[in-house]
Image 1 (spheres, rainbow, N blue to C red):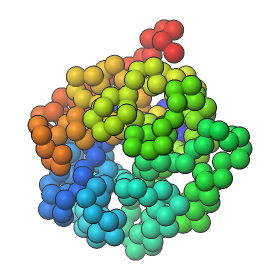
Image 2 (cartoon, rainbow, N blue to C red):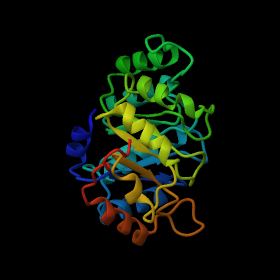
Image 3 (tube, one colour):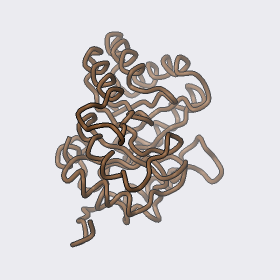
Length: 254
């Protein structure tokens, strides 16, 4: 997917804002999805941060039933696409549409040849076999995973572009903004391919990242102070207002 396509998908001129909801239970998930959509977010991701993915599945069904037209993605914590895509295919056959899957680790191997990525290739095969047709956001040089040294950022970005719809990276940890040099490297290598960032984005720094990034997957930056689970509508509204503007990459910035 390229930068034009993702903006058309979300009907945006700046980055799409996709709040990440760390699900506690059905009521909390429903309330936060409602807040996100009411404020104008382009969609949401739901994640099972505190319990096994099996407990998230019925919640996904009820959220979809409540919000039939919403753009809804999912992250199954600590699960790669090898296991996730068959589940997504099963959900599709049950009539539960999910628009995207985000994996923290897309299994990109910087020390292997670009055309011999055994784990990423296996994930690609699982995706194809599942008959699931949503967007794949693949974690690359991502927080809480095997570290990738900065000198290999260009390598992993180039490989990742072959295996997913939206290359997705992050800072060093939850709530930590990615180094701008990392984002610029990814953008330079990806050229016109879609790029998402999934940590450390706030209303205060979003404009710095917006020229280079096509989607913000954001939780702590828009949540209530000291609250891991619940969106602050005012902070989300402020972030969305920033992202309603068009951003150009500064000349010679990458």
